Each structure stands twice: as C-alpha cells, then as structure tokens.
Amino acid sequence: MKFFVDTADVKDIRELNESGLLDGVTTNPSLIKKSGRDFLEVVAEIAAIVDGPVSAETVALDFETMLKEGRKLAAIADNIAVKVPLTMDGLKTCKALRNDGVMVNVTLCFSANQALLAAKAGASFISPFVGRHDDVGFDGMDLIEDIRVIYDNYGFDTEILVASIRHPVHVLESARIGADVATMPADVIRKLANHPLTDKGLAGFLKDWETTGQSIL
Ligand code: E4P
Image 1: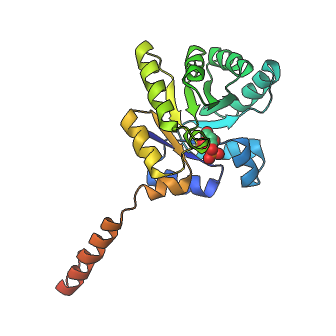
Image 2 (image 1 turned 90 degrees about the vertical axis):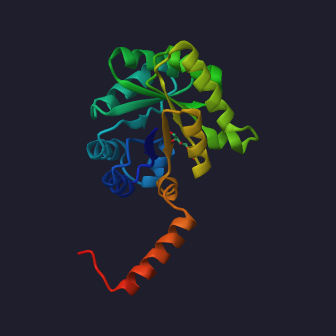
C-alpha cells in the first residue's frame, strides 16, 4: 500500500520524504490556507521534493473554468495529480484531463456509486473520505470495502486513495481491505511506528547492554 501525506507543510514533507516512506502528497484548499503559503508556489515546491503524485485541487465549479484551472495546475510539474470534486462537472473535467494525459484525483467521494462514476471517467485516484463518513454515523471502511469489490468486479485500474484518515486503525483497515493508497496527516504516519512494547523492550535491551561495558563502534 502506498502512503501519501495529507499536508501542504513543506517541513513535514521533506522530513517524511527523507525517511523513504513517502509515495506522494495530497493537498486541499483548507490545507493550503493552513500553510499560509501561495498555492501555486507551494505546490511547485512540493512537486520538486517528492517523486510521486502531488494532488493540487481546483476550486471552480463549472467545467470550462475547472478545466482551465486543472491545465494550469498540471503544467506546474509532471507529477501533479489534478484534484477535482465528485460532481458532474468534476467528472467531465476528469475525462478531459485524462485525455490530455494528466493524472486526476477525484475527491469528496462519499458513496460507492460516486466511485463507480469516477472510475468510468478514467480517474487515476478516487478519494473516499472515511473520517468525515464516520463523523456522521456511518462506517467509512464499509465504503472502502464496497469500492474495492466494485473496482475488482470490473477490473477498473483507478486507485482507491483512502482520505480523511484520522488514526492508525483507519490505515490498518484500509490495508486489510486492499486499498491502493492511504493519505494521512504526518502525525498519523509517525504514530504507525509507535508501540509501547517496542519502547519497553528497547529500554530493557539498552539497560542490559550498558552493563556489558561493550560498544559496537
Ligand atoms: C484528501 O485528499 C483530503 O485532503 C483529506 O484527507 C481530508 O481530510 P479531513 O477530513 O481530515 O479534512
């Protein structure tokens, strides 16, 4: 499973990229606001740091303007994935950008039927939002399971990019179901490495090692 970080914070992106664990980045208008940076400038900087896809989101609602925005974003770098909303205009824009050979991430997906439409529009990625689904009383992971079954039934190659991940259990469940990508905040990626028994075990080994008086180097 690929790991994307869901942020426009260049410091976090650089640090995770150096760990070798990062396969891509997703941003959205709210994350751009949080970064306090100029959108086009920060996206260009991120795309130069990571080799994998960097999602940059359009903000227009109509097809013509959305397509213009998408083409402008795609021109920033070869690894830009243009993010469009799951609306009829977004799907039409998806198809047009895919015909241009541009990667497209269809975002704000909350139903399996929406995911089916995105695949038919040739989306490179579909972004179902699990955390926001949980927030309104549904199990977001049921949605991921449904999309996996449907995509496998028809051999769609659209990658399931699980979004709105809030905690490590979302990542575990996504991996169990066979989602292609998980995008998550930097702190969730870091939390995946944590286990109290790892910390306890390490402390015990180091305490015993000290008593040997030896050194490796
Ligand atoms: C995905 O691409 C979105 O940017 C993101 O995962 C949304 O997450 P949130 O629901 O925590 O805002």
